[in-house]
Image (cartoon, rainbow, N blue to C red):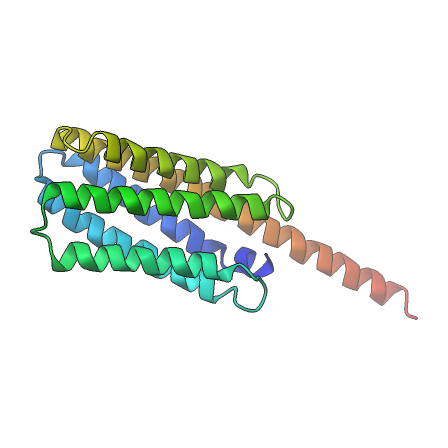
Length: 195
């Protein structure tokens, strides 16, 4: 948990990347799904690398560091496949995006359940995960919906998830500040009362 608070900025960066992707989807909905899928590939790569960095930074302090690592490697794989084979049919791309959203959501909900004992407001991570699962299921149930609807659905998910990630990141930063203050107070008290 302590390393997660030290690297709060990675969580915020992940949220910023999601918001930028979401805004692009809403600002330019007339773009073809092919172009949006390319941008999704870039987003999945960036998000994956950030999740891998987060996981690797927790190898010593958390037995569940592999969850972030796995999520990140999966995201990188989806991003690479999307960028290498952009000509894959729209249906296959949508299925891949849906699988990514569902897996990411499940891992986020699992992480939130684990964090509930360590910090308050872990519900933000759980809500992001539930939202991700919902978008994945929606894309599976309605894969042939209009491309604009798909673009807006993915964009809305990215915006909301990004806001939740940024909020969680700043809450982690505040948690880190409280830890530092508590440590400072403890060390100050020990200095006043030598043994």
